[in-house]
Length: 124
Image 1 (spheres, rainbow, N blue to C red):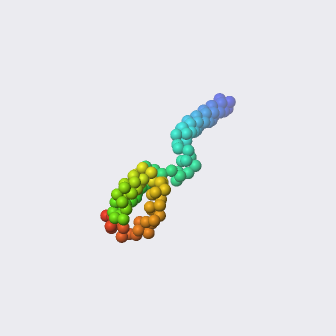
Image 2 (cartoon, rainbow, N blue to C red):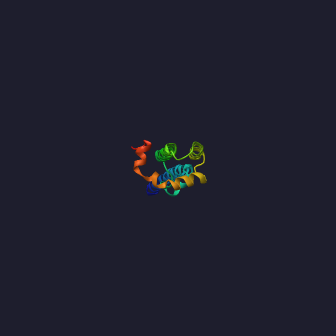
Image 3 (cartoon, rainbow, N blue to C red):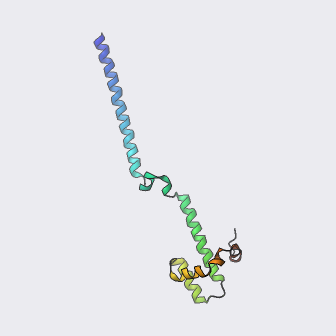
């Protein structure tokens, strides 16, 4: 009787241990798959990459800045039409051109004024 009871008890413990190992293994495999599907930056810190809303917000802000600069260039009377066209083309297609850098550095004080937003029509 004692041997049978002991055997039954060992069988239950062994079955429970085996079941626990299998469930731990399956959850570990699921976690590993989820880990492999993550972007590399998220594996270390979730704050390193932006989510879709933040990306869209940054893109909209960038487009607003480009539009502001285009309207500012168009509103200047002291520039010739050819110069305006070249600067607007640079704003749209080549934002790191030397011509655009010189322009923004020479008009930096005017670009930073809040009255310029009213003048261009972008005051929000």
